[in-house]
Image (tube, rainbow, N blue to C red):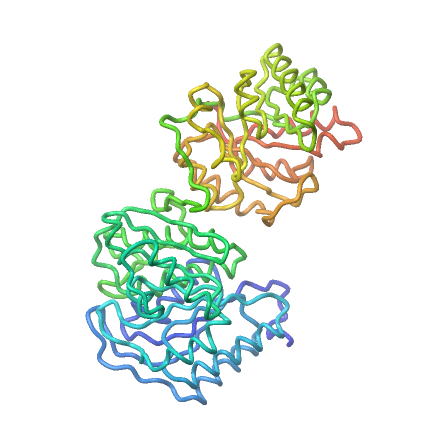
Length: 509
């Protein structure tokens, strides 16, 4: 299908298929406000007109089937969406028409269209909005097309016919939904009474469980929270983030809105406030990977300089010697696919050489050897955080650097209180196979700004070269790590000089 616009710029688009809320605090109106805050083009397909306010629903009037279908046709003239957020559905015909268009979009569009379903059963006032007679057709037709369903505790119990009293019940209920075709479940924890004053939402997929925790807020501005949460997740998916990242940012967006005391961004009394893309780390949740829990150290790791200078990552003592001789003061030794005895010999030699020349040497992965030979520090990836003895590393005095690739991993890493945090990979890289997508300069700048209040040193890594390092440092990141820009350069000494001119970013301590 040709796009309606001739502009070369094609913004990300998300649709909401939902009811209209007369006070604009919930339904498609709050969805559209949310999409705007995430800098997306938001469009709507109206399923019903509701007369409601934050304390009650007066009536729900479905639109006729012809009007419902024609809304999809009108939107398709402009192109395909990157995501669809679904709210209130009013009839079997609406479910069938919606499923028809989701399948059409996925068959014809050049990009995948994510589907997020907020299973609206009752309004926040407690009144019913949709008829339970719809559930069998939703399960049969819609569930197999849904990427994420976002029930609260009451809805999860209803949809799975499971009493929810423990985390085990959440898992049991979610697996029932998986069996019906749902790909992922975001079980919202506001109704999980066993958690007390902590709210913990669970994101369950076929392979993993993620947790997002924050303190319970007392707020009167709660109308539309469910709609907004699902819409924020959908907006992040439409922008290209994965599920865990989408939920991390959506949680922060919701918490910031609940905290607003002056009504800024409020569309109606007692409705959730819309306060823009979240950038205040105080509202971001603590994130956990349930299969790989972290044993957090008792104290923060030893500090390091905010500006580490040019930070080459090399795989041999030979390269270490070369770079030390030209004045590089921060290095990482990363050795892969060699016998352990050889690796230990290289690390021992590297640490001794670094100490001789007063160089900050981080050992990649091999934390036991870094402790044994008393290196300056160790650098760990996300997969190593759960298996390493973080308390022993911290007590040994080693500095710790941690790799991150997204918001979820940033918040998980910060719980460890490391010496520095690395953001990557910024650009495509050939040095290792990466499961994540390049983050780019825009996301790098957001990550740097997010952690800035914590005064933690930051390092950018991944595909950085002589042509890109100046723009990388303009994001405010403290330092830049490089690999092939040095080790594969035709004139590595000149490359070091060119890179070093820009490698100290951020601020002076």
